[in-house]
Length: 110
Length: 114
Image 1: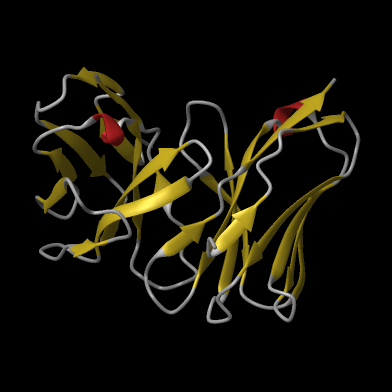
Image 2 (image 1 turned 90 degrees about the vertical axis):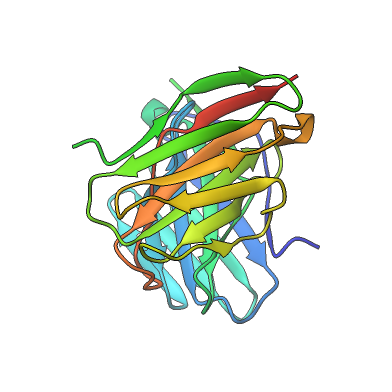
């Protein structure tokens, strides 16, 4: 079993839709939770991070962590074609290493 | 505003050839990382360097070596390339190794081994 599981998609939604992206993890020692966005042929860029259970909002993006269920989510409101990318969850425990999900490919159709 | 720069962007090798992938950052970061990204596998850590002069193995170090040349540069070497090493390689850096600090990535080197 992978330490971090992420549905690879692909996910296709119409412009303006609410998008929900999810990851589950197995190691309860994980403490820091991040979402990266990766455009085609580019490196990942950090979108959001949080280290506690609950919600964190940044504009149209909301990151949600449920440590009791070992489940993290990223919600995108009013999705735009420019949001089309691969979204990677990344989780870190006490060690220096980040453990990445395999990524979900999102397409927002105009 | 270069950030993390990787060279080359593309490379094709034959099995058994050697090659060094170069990475440089201009953000004065202490920690640097090498990942490989394969379809369905996500990003997997090959090696990292917490600070100048130190290197440590990550999840998939076999077949690779690294050199932290100075604070700016961290190179990845394939001594005898194998088809299983066909991948996209990313270099990343962080100011230090505090958990909340984001990793800044380069745009990758696409490597094909025939």
